[in-house]
Image (cartoon, rainbow, N blue to C red; front, top):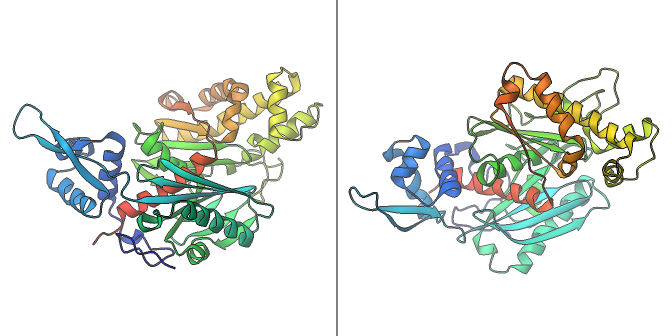
Length: 399
């Protein structure tokens, strides 16, 4: 059954949030209040560089639909005290889902992406039909446990590894899932009766870092995730940058070795073949070390000082540093946030990564860019997907 919310989002599926007429100014104002509020309208204008009239035009509809609320006053000592604005955190809720090869994780959050409840399913089969069925099940489980949430629910956001066309809600290609041209938004909307938006999972982390994390003070930064694969997402000029078809930021598929190992994308010698969990495990064995059943075993070997494991992680860090230097040279970023489950082993590869990044960066590009480590858990991936819904709903055309 479709859900009618305060935005009239009864029609599920791509376009339910009015993304084609998104008001980026409104989204910018909301994000500024979210990260720095409570703020007066004058303070908003100063922080965003917008005129007072533009701020007023953006703020009023957000108050009307319950995204913002006026709370108290602040006096500057001159003129009338000004009303302060903050996010109406509890007025609406959203659901974020992270789809991975081994699991589907979902969280129910408030409008500040604070986690209210969570649900998890292990996937024995990650083909599209069973995976999307599991995604629908974790959504239904969250709503069953929070019966008052459905009336306040704005929609569902889904993060998936690979090339995702966010305009259509389709996964064009995912090496980690083995998917090609899979519609995600429409089937999940049909199963749950809820508006659904889909994006690359690292792009969801970019929005989360921009609003709540290491990217709050940066206009241009990248999130690079290390783990089963090597992913990337970009914020350029304050806006999420996905490119012409949603494939921007795929740092893992920078071609480094024409005669290298085969990559999940079908090419050879991609950076991912040197930096992923599987690459480290294979390198340890190739150097004469023991066969590791998992990356956790490899990390334990490295931390125990096993020379072969230490060398393998150093080689991984050196290769990753070259990839990060490429980002610095192309985009002259303010910051790179290194994330993902694999970032927890930064103590093993970090020194080699930082040295390589500096050595391969052009002129001051490497020094201009701060490297920040922010390892994530399943909740943060799903919380980032929830941010998709908030971002889309706030930017949508409002009545």
